[in-house]
Length: 313
Image (tube, rainbow, N blue to C red; front, side, top):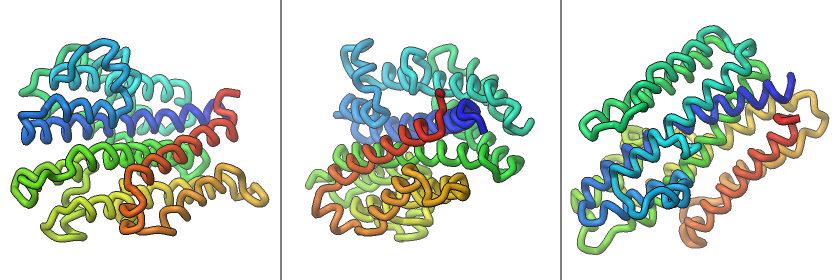
């Protein structure tokens, strides 16, 4: 398989995942800002930090506000991580590797672009924001469904999955890192309905609210949320679940490689790091430091994949 084709598939699904993750961040930011009206600007700053676009935003805006932040995250073509930019990049990659995709996958990607581009050509009114965010998530799900329902389980499928789970793991780590400290409860609100709504919003941002309640019941606690989003292997957006899937799919790619590869060793090390500790030790040593180390390592792994499989060679 040519490195250029592998890279096109990998980035197609990274960008599709990124568009959905950004929509979820915006939804979470809006919900938390509504419960923290006195400090809404700080919340939108944290959303932009989660998306790694805070500095780019400040090059165009002097203050943090909902209108400007939402527009920057959804529509701004100067922001390479905006939904509009990500969808365009995903379609461009899909066009490049169109012969490697089934008709259903290509059509799902193309229809995603055709539906979302007109929606995002103009500023999204606040009253329309929930519908737009829901459409972004739905269109991403259609592409993912076409992949699972029609693609052969070959190298193309494995690169698509690796790209998806690298992006997803990075996103979950960033949401947990930033939001955990933004929402560390003040004494006055601990245990109140306001406190619970804010923590539930973290779970909503990674589609985990229902799954969390199934696992832990009705009590929403910071420690349990961190445990769930890092170590619960049943949760499809947890760090452990993502790293396990990355290692599995990369393992299929490396079946003919005696002794494996450096990328596979890095993936297995990531998985071993997560399996070798628990939430109590993580919090004692520092959740922020743990997450930052994970983000650095998943980023290094992504770069190793690009080098090892000669995406740009």
